[in-house]
Length: 140
Image 1 (cartoon, rainbow, N blue to C red):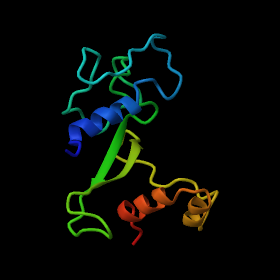
Image 2: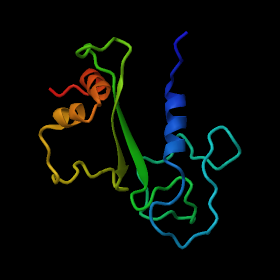
Image 3: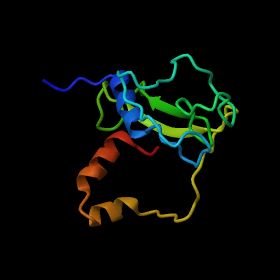
């Protein structure tokens, strides 16, 4: 039987990946409790504000990603099936730090700028990755 995937499971894994260790130095406590989903560790409310102050009011960093505040995740469920995909496929469009005013930095720097990524990946033996990218990250 194929493994079952859900948004809850995806966010649980994403939460483990984006641990609650501050990104920048803080004057707060030196001992931090990492976030462990479905345990008694601190967690953030599901109905929290869509943006935040540049520093947490109460000094707690559990629900705060410094210096931005929160993370913005965007997903796509395409109405039309993409090349080689199926009706059950979906992709993560991006994960960005929110700048606490509802905005976010939209682009990375343009250097280095490479136009031959597919060729580089194939030359390095990553044909399977190229195949997966052609299925899920179709450039229009």
